[in-house]
Image (cartoon, rainbow, N blue to C red; front, side):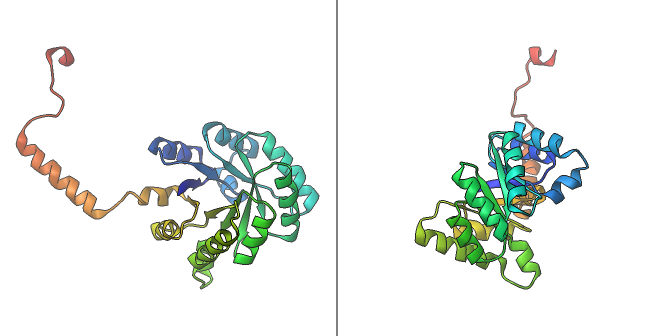
Length: 225
């Protein structure tokens, strides 16, 4: 499973890259606004440092406006993916852009039927929002199971990208189901490596190592200078 980071923070992206875990980035208007920087300045920097796909969302709600903004987005970088909401106008734009060779990430997916239409329109990615469904009393991961089954039935090439991830449990379940991608906030990405028994075990090892009274790297006269 690939890991994307859901952020517009360049510092968070650089940290994730340093971990060696980052396959791509997803952004949205809210995340970009949070950074309090210019839109183009932010996006172009992200595109320049991320080797994988970077999803950038249109803000137009009509077909022609979406196409115009999509053309501008793809000019910003070869790894730019156009994020388009799952509306009637959005599906029309997805079909046109996909036929023209533009990669589209259909966002704000809340039902398997939306995901089916997205795949038929040729989207590169479908982004079901599991956390927001949980907030409304639905089991968010159930939609991921349904989409995985539908896509496998018909051998769709659209990648299943689990979005609105709130916890490591969402990531675990996404991996069990066989999602292609999980896009996670930086804090959740960091939480994936944490376990209290790891901390306890490391502390015990270090405590015992003090009794050895040596260092792993042997100091030499030359090194001391």
